[in-house]
Image 1 (cartoon, one colour):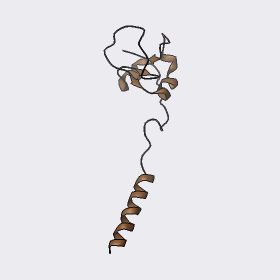
Image 2 (cartoon, one colour):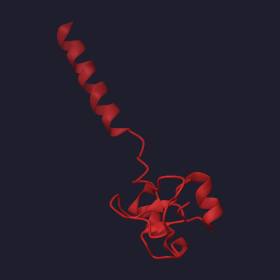
Image 3 (cartoon, helix red, strand yellow):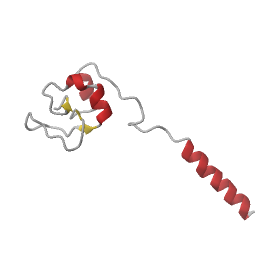
Image 4 (cartoon, one colour):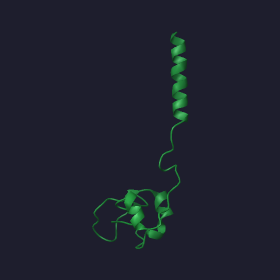
Length: 87
């Protein structure tokens, strides 16, 4: 009986790991049509990296860091500081 329990537990762990949902970085990066649409989802905009500093001064919100989303919306980074649609 103990061996059967170990087999069931092992099978559950193996199947549970292999059927996990993709993370946000694995999903396709969404391209937004403009900053208004992007800011509905990411209030502070999207930064290419965590160490990027905003050239425009103070902002209300901290940008979400995602290289994939930033690159999909690079056209919205008007001041070319590495943060798209900062607010």
